[in-house]
Image: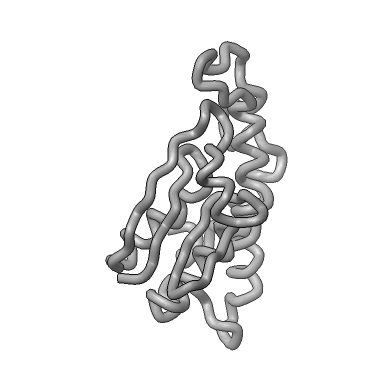
Length: 151
């Protein structure tokens, strides 16, 4: 086992842990708690950007969830869960793969803008349901006939 996943709690590194479990691969999980809201110093020292998640594999250190997911899926999963460039749905796959990083966190922050574990956000969320996001209906319609993306 050479893959190490540095998992910062309450971050996008949840995706990397999930992928490793879905692929059934062996990996070492190093768990980091927030201090109290931000990443602790020992986590920030892992990568120059102090981004979450971070993976280490055979001397390589990779940060950012999309980069980690793509690396693991290609290297350890033989491309499982990915659409190949010569497949008809490739453009949609690339769009939705990056949409998750670019938009979903923004929507989630609108729904729950306060992440202070001491106050537990006493303010009402700005968006209470995905359907309140203006683009949600268009995205749902676009995905409805694509089982590869919508389950």
